[in-house]
Image (tube, rainbow, N blue to C red; front, top):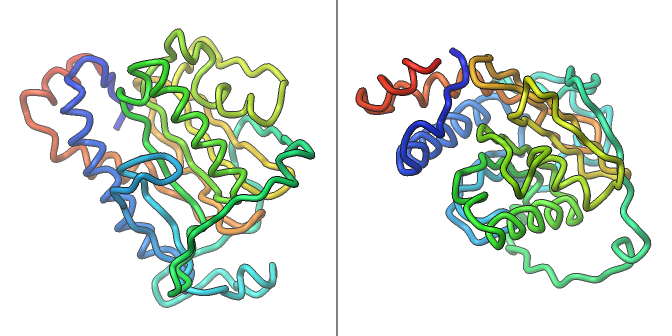
Length: 251
C-alpha cells in the first residue's frame, strides 16, 4: 500500500490513524522481541511527549551484557539482528565534552522496567508552531543523549521550520554536516542507535511509495526490524470510508 498524502485530511483523522498504527506496531513487536523486552504505547510527558511507543527491558538481559549471547530465536519468534541495517543513508555524530560530563537526575521505577528505545510517529501538531517543533527536536535529542535508541517516522512534508526534514533538525544537535533530503523523497524514516558515537540510519521516502522495515535498536549494534508497511496497512483499514475516498483518490 502506498504512503498517503495525509495533508489532504483533518489532523484528527491522522491522529486516529496514528493511534491505531502505534497499537499495531506494539502488537507485532511484542510477538517478535527477544525475551525480557516489551513494547508499550504510553500517554506520557516523557522525552517525546504523548503517544510514544516505548521499548523496555524487564531486567538486564544477556543481549545487553554480552553481544554474542542472544542467538536470534525465541518462543515468540523474535529476532535480534547483528548485521548492518539495509538503509540508504548512514551518519555518525559524537557528543561534545560538556554533554558527556553533564549530570542529570533520573527517576527510575524500582521494578527495573527501564526504557531502552522509543518510537515516535510525527503528527501535524509537532510542526504546528515554532515552540512545538523546537520542543520536539530538543526532546528527541535529549532521548539520544540519555541513551535511548529511537525511531522517527515523519509522513508530512518539510515546513519552513524543517526545510530539509525532521532528521536534519535533530541531527544538527550532534553533527554540523549538512543533510539534504532528495527532492523526490521529502518524507523521512530515521532510526538512531544511541551508542557513542551516535548513528543515524535515514531512509528518505515519498507519498506513493511503500514503507520499508526500519531497525529498532536494542543495543548499540543489535536491532529488530519494525514492519512499518504491514502495520500501516493494518491501521489504515480502520480509517473512515469518507477519508479513505479522499486519500485513495490522491494516491
